[in-house]
Image (cartoon, rainbow, N blue to C red; front, side):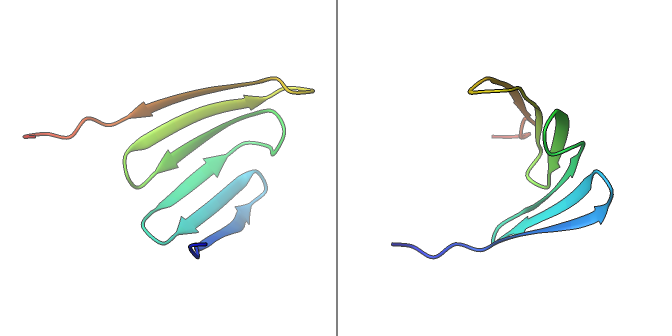
Length: 67
């Protein structure tokens, strides 16, 4: 079983800084409800947790140049 590193810090009410071994991200919004995450890898995720097994998630990645 591989070991992983992940840590999350509450910076301000409704703002979290998430750190793992290869990148970091900032999440804005409540834990339950609409929130948006911006990652150092260029990924932006919009999520909305709904009651029960329902939820919404849309992810966009920044396109790399020159490849």
